[in-house]
Structure formats: structure tokens, C-alpha cells
Amino acid sequence: MSNRSWTTSGVCREGRREAKRQAVLQAGARLFNDHGYEQTSLEDIAAALKITKRTIYYYVQSKEDILFGCHQQGLGVLGETMAQSQNPDLPVLERIALLIRGYCAWVSSDLGATIAMVREHSLSPERRQALRASKAEVDFQLRSLIKQGVAEGRLRPCDPKLVAAAVFGALNWIPHWNRVADPVPQEQIAEQYLHLVMQGMVPARD
Amino acid sequence: MSNRSWTTSGVCREGRREAKRQAVLQAGARLFNDHGYEQTSLEDIAAALKITKRTIYYYVQSKEDILFGCHQQGLGVLGETMAQSQNPDLPVLERIALLIRGYCAWVSSDLGATIAMVREHSLSPERRQALRASKAEVDFQLRSLIKQGVAEGRLRPCDPKLVAAAVFGALNWIPHWNRVADPVPQEQIAEQYLHLVMQGMVPARD
DNA sequence: GTTTGATGTAACTGATGGGTGTAATTACCG
DNA sequence: CGGTAATTACACCCATCAGTTACATCAAAC
Image (tube, rainbow over all chains, first blue to last red):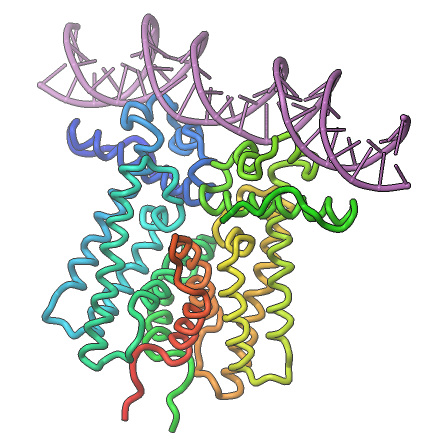
């Protein structure tokens, strides 16, 4: 399955170069998720793509570059979800649902999972900082929505920081248990989590 | 703070040896959590304890031994919580609360956090399997309680596997954000999470 | 005070893996 | 065909680090 073949029959030159860089990132992400960043050697990535280590260096400058590339790429994808959930015309609860569903789908992809699974320590301080900032942005978004929901009386009073931490914790943990041969469909997880977070486990009395 | 001093004035011989082994595990756990297992060298652990690498090898046989020791030790502590939550005289909801509170406290400790933060890949296959089994046991416990709760009508119908995954995800993620200079008190987190999981965010209608 | 446990010093080994240089080779494109 | 981009093969450097060993030493126990 993982063998998105190396030879790309894409647009001429420029586009192909980018596509191959992509392939390197994708393969890196998958291996990082499966075996950990430190435990993945460039030879491993090369082997997965059936190319040589030297060729990898034709597309990236360092191993860390691959990891950071995964993050950038991944955050780009998440950006769409972020944008959607910022639509002020939608009811708050729906915007929260949108964010949770989108994040769930995202963290279930190779690139998204990398951000949840690879510790930040592997990045240089500057890049680590950049990554933290991006994460903080997403966190801020959910907290804001929760605050708004409480203010509008649509949510119980609560500590938005802790509730957001719980939600992202649950979501970030998904790739830790669902990267298996027969994974639970991502949509199903999202619905169940959403229901849990909204209604809770205890049935309303009478 | 971390400087639980090396020189132990404990019971004679046997006891002291064990106490020092403990100190190695404890220091290892903290460093593993902070910088990752792979990024922590034995020299780092030695430096933290102000001893030499040679001395460490007097108490453990390998680096992996330290990690596995942390896991064993940690799981031992969690055992108490597991036992409590198995008490059949208690109402189901209370047993669930007990488990969540206990797990929250546990995962907030150095030894507990190690299990949540260090990927399993760093262990030998046999040990990894043992660890997985222990984790599965805890997971099974919560799932069982949820099932029972549903059967008794005290919980809404739900997918116990997914709900348990969400709960443990939220809990396991705690050390990822709360290992800071001024952490949120662990009890406070437990209460908020418990409330979230039980009642949900949306207020009951009329 | 002698045994024995505990720790330090200080070197070495062996392997891994990131990263580089270069020349040769292959694939593509005009 | 001829030129250029892509890729390989291969050799190599260098740093890190787990793991080991031999020897000396220090401290407590009996």
C-alpha cells in the first residue's frame, strides 16, 4: 500500500521535482510514525522509496528538513479546517463540531499524525518554536469557541483550557492506537468523540 | 528539584542497593520524558545523579533495562488504582471515577508519564509485548466498566472501545502539555475531565 | 585491619548513521 | 542526436554513544 511509486509522470520538470520531494516527505512521515523519528535512518526512507540515500539529498538538505517539511505540509492541510471553523455565520456548536471532525480526519493522515506522534525535541529551536506557535493557534481556536459557547449559554460553564486539552489529547492519541491493519474509520471516531464531548456518558435525568 | 541526592542513608545493603536502582530509574524517567529516550545518553543520566556511567552499570545491565524498569515500576503503582476500581461493592460510576482519578494522578508522575510518552519501539520485542499486555489490561478494565454501566442503564449506549480510547487519550496527553514550571494541579484536571466525560459540555435542556 | 561492596578514572571497541564528494550512468526532452 | 537533469555507485569522514574492561580507590562492615 505504501508504495506510491517513485517514478512520477507529472508535469514537466519543476512540478515533478516538487512531487518527488512530496514523496520523500510522505514516506518519511509514515516511517517516523511507525518507528519513531530517531529510529528511522535515511537509508530506511530510501529503501521504502527504492532509491538511494544520495538521491534523497537531491531533494532535501537534511533529515530534519524532512521532518519539518512534514510539519509544514501537514499544517497547511489543517489550515482549511481552521478556516472553516472560523466562519462567524455558523452556530458555535457547529463550528466546534467542524473543528473536531476536521482535526480528527487530519490526525488520521500520515502527515497529520506526525505532528501528534513525533516529539518536538527532534527539531532545531527555531523550528520547534514555529511548530509550537502553530499548535498554540489551533488550541486557541478551540478555546475561543468554547468560551463563546459558554458565553452564549449553549455550553456549561467550564475551564476552556482543560476542556480543549482533553479534546486534543483524545484526538492526538488516535494515531497511537488506530494505525493498525484494520483501523476504525476516522469518521466514526469523530462522531463518537463529538457525542461524548457534547452529551457526556451519563443520560439526562427524566 | 530533581536532585533527589544520590547518597542513600537507608537500610543496610540489600535495601540500599534497591533504593539506588530506584534513583537511577527515577532520573532516567525524568530525562526520558523531557528529552526522549533516544536522545538521552547514559552519561546524561549519570550527570543528573552526579555519578559516573560506570556506576550506573553497577545497578542496571543496559539502557533498555532502565526504560523497562521504569515501566515495571510504573505499572506497579498503577496496580493499586486498578485494584480499587475492581471493587464490586462500589457503584459503577464511582468505579469509573476512581479509575480516571487514579490514572490521572499516575500519568502525572515521572514513572507514569514515561509509559505515555516513550514509544514502545525502544524496547525489545518481548518486553514490548509485555508492556502492551499491561496496557491492554487497563484498557479492558475501563471498557468493562463502561459496558457494565450501559447494561445497568446508568450510561448512555455507546461504543466502549472508542469511549475508552478517548478517555485514555485525553489522560495520556496530559504530560505532553502539563510538564511545565507551573503545572495545573493533577486533581483539578481529573475533576474537569471526569465532569466532561460524564456530563458533557452541552447543558441538559430544561 | 582486612574483607567486601561501591565508585571513580580512563581508556577502548564496535556499530550506526548523518552527511559529502565525485564520477559514472541512465532517463528525459528538445 | 545531443544536452541536461536525475540518479546511482561507492568511498569516505566524523561524531556519537552503548557497552566493556582493567585498575585503583574509598567506605563501610565485622
